[in-house]
Image (cartoon, rainbow, N blue to C red):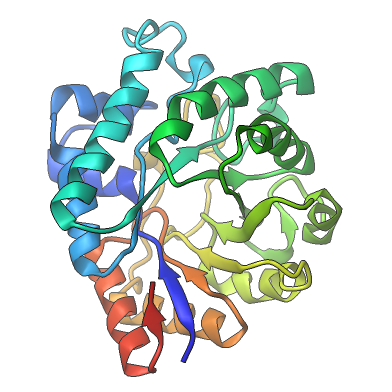
Length: 297
C-alpha cells in the first residue's frame, strides 16, 4: 500500500463546458467575474470525486496577460477571488489543501516568450505573494524551460511554503521539455526545499520516459497529463485559446486512469489531471487506487 496525493483535474476546460461561453485568452479568469461561484463548484466536484488538493484558479493571473484588457487593473482582486473560490469549496468539503498555481509568463508552451530573469523573478514573486498566505503550497505549472524553472524557484523559495515544479514535455519526446532542452537538465536546478517535481500538460504517453529521469532526484514525484490530441501550430500564437485544440476521441476516464496507475507503478506518488481531465476521470483514478490498495492522502 502506498500513500498517494490525488490532485484535481483541469479547471479551464471544465469552466468552458459549464459556462457555455466562447473561450478567450483569459477565459478562466473572466469566468470568476461573469459567473461567481462556478469555480468553487468545480473545486467541489473534484473534491467529491476524490481529489485532496484544490488547485487555485490563479494560473493565468499575470500582469502581462491582463495588460490592455478590461481586467488590467484587477490583478489583486482576481487573485483574491481565486483563493476565495478554492477556500469556499475546501471549507464546505471539510478537508483538503489549497495549492496556489502560477502559470507561465507570456503564454503556455511558449518558452521563447519567457522574459529576462530580473523581470521574470519580480513578476513570479508578486504573484506568489498574493497566494502564499492562503495556500498550503505553491505550484509552478507548465514549466517549459530551464530558465523558467530557475526563475520560478528564485522567486518562490524565499517565501517559506512548499514549492512544487510541474514540467511540460515535448508531446513526441518524453525526455525533452517543450523548449527542446533535456529533462535531465532540470535536475541540477532542484535544490533543497523543493517539495516535489511533476510532469504536467502533455500527452500521457510520453510521461513514463520523463518519470525515469525525475525519479532520480530523490524527492516525491508524479504527473498529470492533458487530453489534447496535440498542441497545434495555431495554438502556439501570442494569444492562444483552447478552441484551437481538440480533445482526444479515446480519452475516457478508464484509459486515463490506466495511464495514471502505470505512473504509480513507476514510483509516482502525486497524480491528477490537467486540461480535459474532469471529475469523472478523477473519480475513476480514485476507484482504481482504492482497488489496488493504495491510500489517498
